[in-house]
Amino acid sequence: MSLTPLHAIFALMSLFTVGGAVGVVLNRNLIYAAMYLVLSLFGIAGLFILLEAPFLAAVQILVYVGAISVLITITVMVTRCVFCKEPPPRQLTLVAVMAALVMVTLGFVIMTRFGGLTPAADVPADSIEQLGVAFVNPQAYLVPFEVASILLLGALIGAIFIARDDLPRDEEAVGGDDHA
Image (cartoon, rainbow, N blue to C red):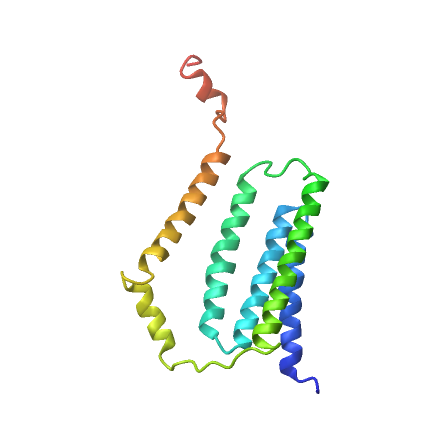
């Protein structure tokens, strides 16, 4: 089997995706972890392009990289000490064991169900149109789509509320008109 440019691009996008995910997990600085998340999400968008799904790649970049990553970064920046204490070593061991179990399970499912290959699917020509109609159809995805936007707005407002400083900023606000 020869190495084609498609294989090289797939390897590069996979490296971005997995490397970014590892950077998120291993980084202690939350801002850097959010930047690694952006790298990982860009890698996923590249994989969507390789799968000939440019609409999903554009949605990935606009929604996840553009909106979710910015929301996470702003939330981390406006809240003060989110994780001040170190997690106990027992908790880290449990997380490592659970991650290994998930990876083994996913590997087993992929190898037994697909034999290492992805199934070829016939995509209808009007699939993007059907997706758009489903998003605005009240019987389909309109309500979950709007609920997700309201939850994101609530999270942003909550972060601002938590981070706001109730202390007055200058001396005039404290003393009123006593010094006049």
